[in-house]
Length: 182
Image (tube, rainbow, N blue to C red; front, top):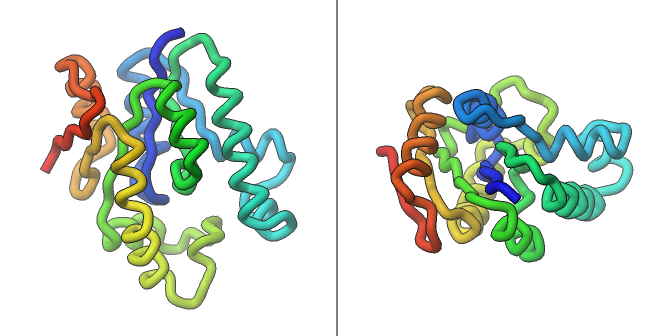
C-alpha cells in the first residue's frame, strides 16, 4: 500500500483547504473523515452530536479511520480535529502513512471561523475561551501523533502544501517530529 498523508490539527487549522492543494500537487484524491462520517450516518456532524452525543461521533471517527486503512491508493486525508484524541486512532494513524500536524494559534482559529455556526464545540457562550482551552489540551496530543509539524499562521494554503511536499521530498517525517515554517 502507498503511503497516505494525513493532516491533523484543530478546527480552522486548514486541514481541508491545505489538503485540497496538497492533493492537487501530488495527484492524489482528498478524503475528508468528517464528510465520510456524514455520508455514512446520513446526517450532519452537528446532528450526530445533538442526537447521539460526542462519544458516538468519536466512535464513528474510529470506524472511518479503520476503513481508510483498507484503501490501496495513497490519498491525502483531512482528519477531523478531535480524531487524534483517542489512543486507538493515534495507533491507526501510525499505520496509515505520514501524519502532519497543522499548528495554528487561537487568534487565527477565531478569525477563520468567525460566523461559522457548524462547529458543535464552539456553540457555547465563550468561544474564545473554548478555543484557547482546547488548543492547550490538544496541542501536545497532535504533536505526539504527528511525524511533521507545520505552522499555518500567516501562510497561504499553497505555501503550506508546498512546504509539506518539500519536507517529504527531503526525507523528513520519520519518528521524530520535524518542525518547519516559522
